[in-house]
Image 1 (cartoon, helix red, strand yellow):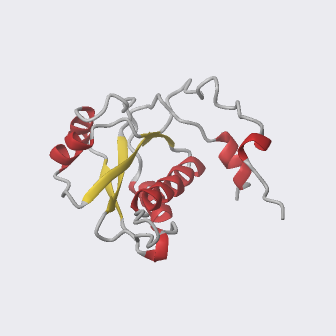
Image 2 (image 1 turned 45 degrees about the vertical axis):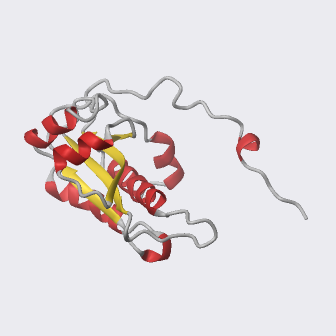
Length: 173
């Protein structure tokens, strides 16, 4: 088993895919990783729409220009009716839960040699229309995925990080 930090460091947003389809057993492992993801109060409000045929991918192209020619995609949604609500201020956990699910699937995909890109630049209204998504279901994140094309490489800034001291603060009593 690969070291997690190595996997996290090596994973990058793939924006160039070959046309090879993702085998069903690989896709099922990726979906299983999302199924195992933690959600607030274990409500499991996520709904994952699998898009992996030519017709689905054609519909997807009408919803976003950020498909990068991927042969498959997972649209991660949340059920507003099933999401946990924080009592203090009414904040819904749905988008956070869906993001955790997407992250689990993205990292499992990388561990299996499947490239992905997390896309938030899509038209939710078009997604609803193209895929008949009910109003109580909110599209949150789109993972376009497939086998990276020969020559695929990370964005040049992929390994540039702000110093950790700028992003982590320790509270001292």
